[in-house]
Length: 319
Image (cartoon, rainbow, N blue to C red; front, side, top):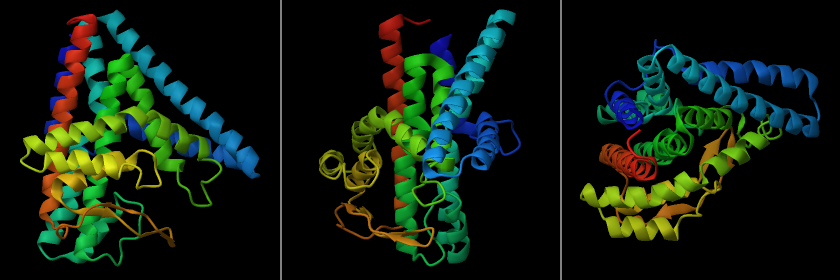
């Protein structure tokens, strides 16, 4: 039943993603983070106090998420095993973000293909933190490819990894870790202190999944007809060409597979951030690279699901 729940949840994400009007725990977690952050800021004013408050915020949000998920699942199973199974499927479905990621990338791709640069820039601003108002088409293409590659880790590989380790409650707790980083883990002045713990522990949580992504995306490159050997080579060579200890592990094999260059300087919140380049510019990044990267994401997603299903079966059987 557990393995079937994983497969059903993955298929649901593939088919329907995150419908806007459906209840979603990540939105609830986000609302709680916003409220808790306001309370902390009312009482904590120095950097030291904000760092401590940020640590308490992380403990409360992640701990409550795990406890509520565990309790809801246990209660549902007590009422009826099938109800417990349905709740488990729903929880796993909500922590996966493959379809949402693909849809967001395609929302940028469509107007770009149609020549509507302003709409493409606007849609891109919804999914990246950089200034998109002056980006040229090639820069937009590169930003989308980077986003899809990077979020293959925290949107698919990492949730499935924690699902393997601790079931749906731990996968939900990971999603809380990731949401905290998305909301307060920025490096600019407003969040530098309160978000320090969230940013660093998100790096810790993604350490193993990011490194798995290097191998999975390289294999996916072979299956998609891209250059798998170059994906593996560039992925290892450029794995640290990023301010994050994890991001380049996914971006570099994608750059290698497609023969393009990612990274480079970008503007964030009015500040110019110099980043090293990732990959080799054997050609310019084109709009077709968006769909190629989405394909790599889905193949890597399938590979990690199969890998973890087999691992679970070998370790504990088919339960």
